[in-house]
Length: 155
Image 1 (cartoon, rainbow, N blue to C red):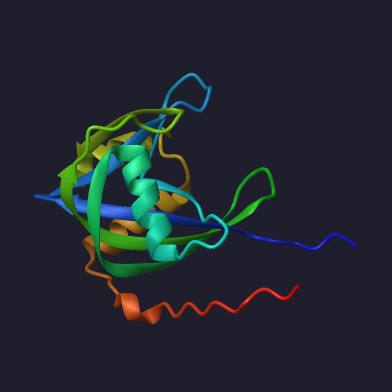
Image 2: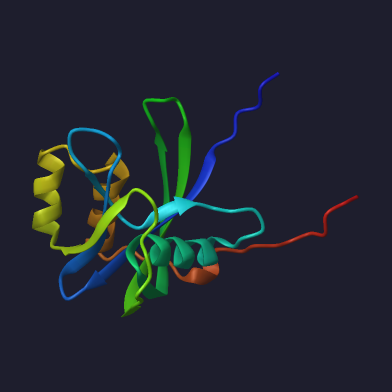
């Protein structure tokens, strides 16, 4: 019996002066695609730590998490379901570090710029615009809404 398991991911909506931090990714198609800094939760890692790590690895920006935007669920055309825990963040400083493999560049784009990319079908998933619209509308939950409890592993 196969057990269905969603993929746990994180994303960060980072805003600065009316611009959003976006990463441009090479997915092997005719065009690159754009996404918020995002990635998979690693074993033993908290959601908050994963969001900070992924943002740094994909954009070379150190950020400060300011809130929890929400849980965004997407089932891709591959049949894989992603549970994307999305955070709001402010930039702290850019770090001189190489970007993750597959990341072409990090950009600061306006919402209008990103809407244009959406019309060109260059957003990585429908979650990208949903997150931005919610953030732009002021949606924000306190980080304390996340309650993580770790239990010792049984041997």
